[in-house]
Image (cartoon, rainbow, N blue to C red; front, side, top):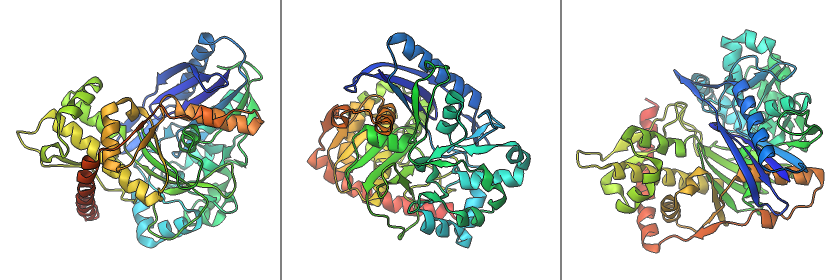
Length: 474
């Protein structure tokens, strides 16, 4: 039995697989996001307890030895820990917006672009650079007390194994890692005013760190590999490894990834290059801030249940009877395929005649347009796989295929956990057939007529977006 652990933003999951990749059991626990005044934080102890709980449950449901475990989780944010991996303060989430004024300043004075040209990372308020700089100015005692500024999965790995603080090249990619040398760029640390905090950056394990479990959640001695984080783990779990092929993750974050062997640090600074365990191979990532979270907000506001979405999408025509949504709902603005910390969502074309179905369909279409923008910017020219919670809606998948104008290889189940296992197997030299493990559940073809309609709609979306970006800067 192989176990994948996926420590998500709002849900912690563990999945057990047999040696063919068949899911044997899945356990999940929700974890709370605390939002207040642009701050978005998480209780590390709650997150860790959820990890132990889901591992205990999976182990109880699937008796038998655990061959190995792979760990993945949400990226970015700042998880300040002491020498034992225990929290110094609450974790600042990747969704946090408190450092937006710093990002605004760095955009204006050229620091933002300089960092991108050196590391391929377009900073946003919830990534470690701005957050650490904000904490250095506003909560210096927290940094003084911390042993390391980790990422989510790294905290869990340290607690499960007792290993020292460490991260991997994928998590370290934003914003301090030089993608060519695969080491921290100390000039970037200096540019962000963090030279005196350099000691907090965890050592980069290349390839990913391994250790044995101490007995919480997993049997003592179980082999565990720490990483990659959730975006590249999902790419592995969906079989996206050939240059030009892409993955769209329709989850809390709307993430677009394209495999590449070319490192191009020209053009508009946006997204990031995620380093992988294969030197010379990257994932060009355009992780938009909000995916299913935008739809969840609309559903909650309108009183629509999740099980009603497919019916409403089927009843409402393309174009949502004139209702349009720019789906930039995150309190920290947008980070891909551009960075605009003050950008906010806009709903237009709404009247007393508009229905709940119009609002739902317009939101799904807006998310689709945002995905198309990200995928084009990332350089997609091959096959496209899709995974994440959004794949549970067949109607939304058909809509996405039409908006994107291309077939979708839908990969269902715990794709991040699956990728974490495949990464762990590679690290430990355990032979697993990745092609069998990553077979798509189905392929959704676009409708030619609707795809043509949405191509025009996408052009109109870009015009509306340009206006919204201009307003965000005033």
